[in-house]
Length: 300
Image (cartoon, rainbow, N blue to C red; front, side):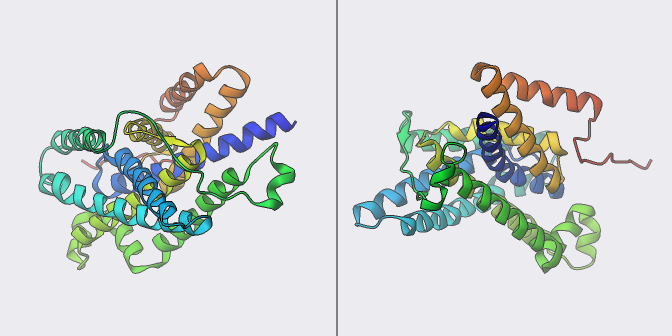
């Protein structure tokens, strides 16, 4: 039973990170119907920022929870600035272009950011400090779930709650929903869609940065390529749940995390990706709109 619970919590931890990154994909798609393939690189940049900041703070004599909080905050700010800049440079000029143009631009921006970090850092894996402190009250459960996993799960749950409140009750959240529903009508009623789109990229990038800091602290190492792998998995989670659906992104991330975790625990770690993508194929065959996605009806 302890082994089952260990795998369950491990899958929940992994799925929570996928969900955080998948939210960025699904929010951008819901408003622009664009897949931001550079989103995984924003996640990677957030992790590298936290590494640089935490190293500098440690050299200055700081340690503990303060380093974790400051590194996370600065990583969120820096990644959000990158998300804003990427939208202005790579996507805004192509809003009226054919659908293939922004897709190619997104892939090009992903490759550019990968190589930019490769040249600025190194191709080798770098050790990442364990920024998340160990809590004494978690010691009796350490054989099932550790402090790091609990912080990741709790942080993700809190962010999901705050995001739900933001989308449903704030003015910007309502503007995002209106823009996603009908962009032209949103403009007619006075909504600044440029501001809404930029805010969506900023918010999605901030969530990705949080995920980057948490998972890097959990795994203990990073390199320039982690954004591509995490981005593909998070995109899979978004499609699995129903691209464009925020609850679907969360559910898809959790389902994907559990699928990989149980495949690793009971079959082999060599087949975790096989099971994950095979499950995705089955979902898309029998439910193309995803787990909670809704079919769209086109009027002609």
